[in-house]
Structures are given as structure tokens and as C-alpha cells.
Length: 413
Ligand code: FAD
Ligand code: PYC
Image (cartoon, rainbow, N blue to C red):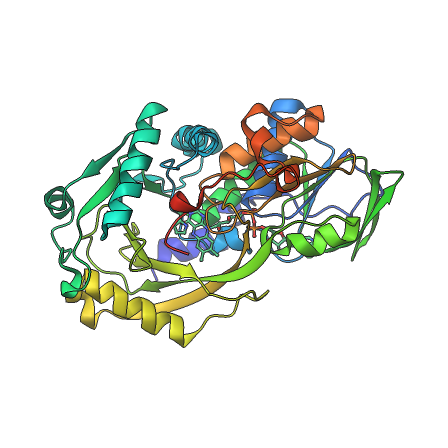
């Protein structure tokens, strides 16, 4: 190790400023409590403090900051959705992403790569064309491209997919990007912390008090907190939190797994997704291939990972990229995806006064982190749903007003 580095490490003059303030003791009341220190909860805290002047906020996290789906996802950012509500919402998020590193003064490794969704069947070509037209109508850069154009951008791809499912066309979305997921949680967390928000890790919410239809307090493993406003942003834990306030939702929790290869020289610039083969891949700045597939096909509240997943995904990766047969998988993991029947989120006010929900983010919520933060902060501060989220309310399931985002949610489910 270079001497200079050792000196730097040991010298008190060069100590690195801590990213967060040392944790305070939990107070007995706050203006607002946010449950969950994932990207969504932290982003909401950040914008509550920055844009609405609400700083007496506690973010409560049962485990560690960013340790839920935020730190487990494959970081695909795009806005090529199918419904007008979805397209407008995710477009606002993509715009916010572009300035976020500067906003935080922290490198999020945001990298604009372009995003191909491959179509191997007539039916998927039809869906891609449909998405391209909806996207263009709302000013989103998406187009149907030929196999030759795919090959040009990605010469390593076997267009015949081993002869089993030749690529017929693809949806190309130029704004498609990736970013460093942990840094997003750190950036929002640090920004909130600097503005006075308290982040309490290892602090689990175990109960919520509702009196006369309104939230009054939360119980935690570190004591009770009085508060008139609670934002629940706990992804795969949402059904458990809803049970505490006596609400029901159609959410089901399925594991979603992913894996990463050893680092290799950069060869894959775009993000490549195949719904028919249930596989997607991107290459990070470090050279690793980040790969994922569809949900595990059964409900399970667990982050365990399986050999079956690695074997299946590796086999399908080789149909697209046969030259990878000697590449090593170095890591795999799983998250708990909170799935809605229409593949759109659940956001906004609930029948309980002061209890706000940010959930139903299944396999698609990382890209929405900035826009969720902004719209939920607005909703909590004004006790009024932000206009970009009115169609995402919990009530849509009782009003028969589902959204139909399945064709664009991510890989095939
Ligand atoms: P989380 O990050 O899960 O945060 C919720 C937090 O709440 C957790 O830290 C949890 O510990 C905490 N919590 C739970 N219960 C309590 C309690 N009682 N008290 C206190 N704290 C509690 N999305 C994309 O857009 N692009 C992708 O490429 C993508 N890939 C994915 C790949 C995988 C493998 C997975 C699992 C997900 C993927 N997603 C993707 C989805 C995305 O990760 C999530 O939708 C998003 O991260 C949700 O963020 P969040 O802040 O709502 O939840
Ligand atoms: O939302 O684009 C996405 C995605 C890809 C993989 C998981 N989610």
C-alpha cells in the first residue's frame, strides 16, 4: 500500500467528513414519519425538506439504508411505457435523473446507454410498435428498429438466438440509462440529513395507531412516536404495514432475482432486454454484466436466491451471446417485488387521514425514485395527490380503473 495512502488514512487532518450525522435519539414526536429508507422514502424526505420546508421528519428503517430493493435492483432507467399516465410519469423521472449527480454533488455514475427491447414474435413486434407510437405521441424518443440496426449497435448478439427465436425487430429507446443504485440512496439520504431530517436505521415500525380514521402515532422497536403524517414506502413489506392500519390491497410479493458476472473489458454499450427469452443485461462501468430475468413464479416473502435461477438465466443469456460460455457468474441475490395486477404503482392518499402510500413498485420502481420523491413529498405536504399520480390511487382497484401497464413493465412476467 503506498505510504501516502497510509498517512492519509491515519492523519486526523485528512479524515473524510462523515456522510451522515451520528444518529440522534428518537424524539417522541415529529411533523412527519417516513417508513422505509429505500430510495423512495429517502427521496420523499429530501424533497419534503428541500421544496416544502418540512424538516422535522424521521425516516425509520428496520435494517440499513438502501438495503431493500434499492440496493438489489439492476438500475434500468427508461420511460418507454405503454399507458399515457405511465409515460408522462416516468418521463418526468428521466428528466430529473439527468441533473441528479449535480444536484447531490455526488457521482451517481448515471450513464445513458440506449435500451433495446427485442421482439422475437409477431405479437411482440405489434406490442413494440404500439409502445413506439404511444411514446412518440408524448414526445418520448422510441422507435421500432430492424434486426440490422440492433446488430450494428450490438455486433456480439446472435440474431438467430440459436435458431430458436430469431429477432424480428426491436423497440429502441435512446434515453435508456443505468446508474449506481447505492449512490442514489446515499445522495438522497445525505441531502435529507443535511437539511435536518433524521434517519434512524435499525428501527422497525411494529404498529401504527389510527384514531377516528386518522393516524396519530407509530410504534417502533425504539419507542413510540406521535405524528399526524406517515408515509409508507416499504416495497415488499407493504402488506404487513397495511395490515397494521386495517387496509387491504391486491399486492402480492414475488421474489425477483439477479446476478452479476466477473468484470470484463467493455463490449456491451446498450441495455438489451428480451421479454420472450426472459432475460436482460447491461454492462456496468466496472465491466460486470448485470443480468436478470422474470419474477419467480410463486408468492414468497424472502430474498433468498436459487441455483435454478442462475442455470436458467445463464442458458438463455447464451442464446443471445454464445461467446460468453466461459464467463463466470460471481454473485447472485434476490429482492421482494410488490406486484400489482396492472403493473402500475399505488401512490397517494388512502382512506386513512394522514396515511400516505408509495407502493406497488414490483420490478420497475428504481427508475421512478426521483419522481416518486417529488410527487409524494408534494402529496404529504399538501394533503392532496400530485397531478402526476392521481391515476395511481389505491381506490382504482375498487373503482375498476386499472391501468394495463403489463406490456411495458420490464421483462416478461
Ligand atoms: P426499498 O428499497 O425496498 O425500501 C423499502 C425499505 O423499507 C427497506 O429498506 C426495508 O428494510 C424497509 N422497511 C420495511 N418494513 C419496515 C418497517 N416495518 N419499519 C421500518 N422499515 C421497514 N426497478 C427499475 O426501475 N429498474 C430495474 O432495473 C429494476 N431491477 C430490479 C431488479 C431486482 C432484482 C429487484 C428486486 C427489483 C428491481 N427493480 C427495478 C425494482 C426496484 O428495485 C424497486 O421498485 C425500488 O427499489 C423500490 O424502492 P423503495 O424505496 O420503494 O423500496
Ligand atoms: O423496469 O426496466 C425495468 C426493469 C428491468 C429489469 C427489471 N426492471
